Length: 74
Image (cartoon, rainbow, N blue to C red; front, side, top):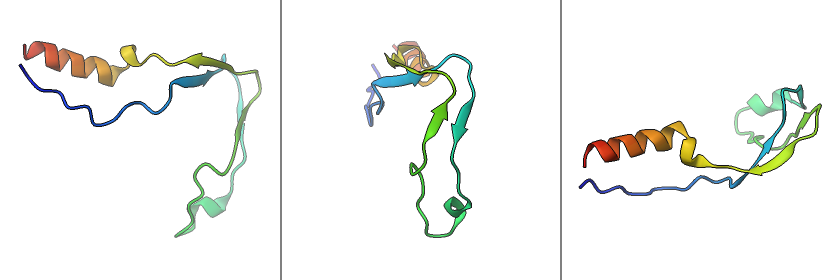
């Protein structure tokens, strides 16, 4: 039986979902400057209201591929 090693867990247990909508994001060309770490400094705002829901990773393609490989090796 193959041994699976869990090396990380998904970092988000909740997700923000919105119906088809426009998303507005502030931006700066400063994000491209060498030595400037600007990730996460700006907000993205949806035109319509978002809904917070639990995220189910069981249907995720990576999880499904791992399960298929594991079960095929049994």
